[in-house]
Image (cartoon, rainbow, N blue to C red; front, side, top):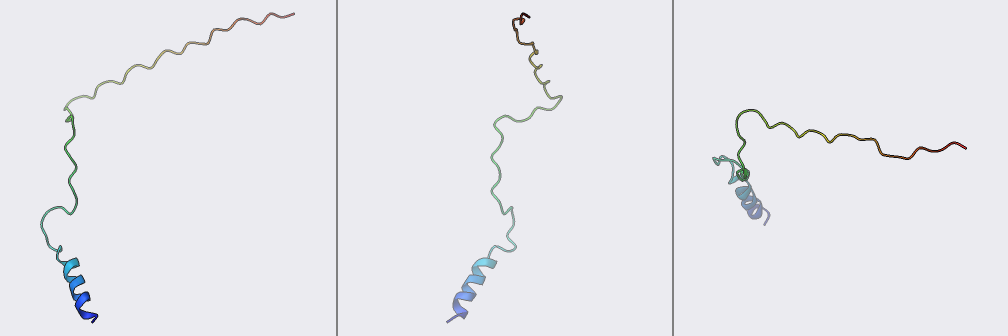
Length: 59
């Protein structure tokens, strides 16, 4: 009663042992392949300007 299901389970689990090929799904190819050579330069940061405020008059 217990031997039949155990044998079937072991057969199913061990059936993949020794199979050639990867055991994972390959990643899809990238939309744009990387070009060889230097990487493009990062854009320059925006200049920092101080906020414009009106001077406080002293009494």
